Length: 153
Ligand SMILES: [Fe+2]
Image 1 (cartoon, rainbow, N blue to C red):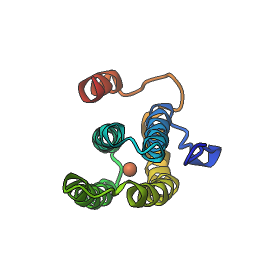
Image 2: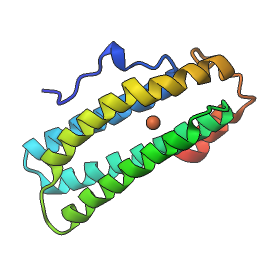
Image 3: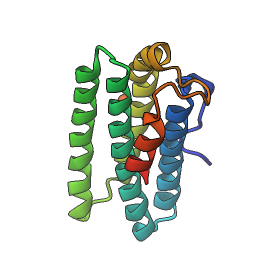
């Protein structure tokens, strides 16, 4: 069973962001499955991928906000930074041999849902107004495609 189900109230209305958020939710569910199965190797592999993907997603969000001249970019960046530090602490404990996955999962679930519904919904409005991006129409002058390629490969 899925640990976290996607629900429409998590949609920001920006296609490219919603896809990334859904990918993070998928990772969360994969992590939960691996942990339930007691497979340490897969668990630590998924954990690293989840963290890696999330940090890349943050970088993308921040560039998008910059592009849209979002007035609270600095505050949003700070929220990402604090979260990144929290996750780094978990990874440190995991490296020391502790199974941090259950605790990390519950923290992630709460944090992610709150962040998407609160801070992300806020910048999404600004991005929609200034850049569009709800649909396939890209008003960023080619920035979108190259940023995706550069960050996600
Ligand atoms: Fe964010």
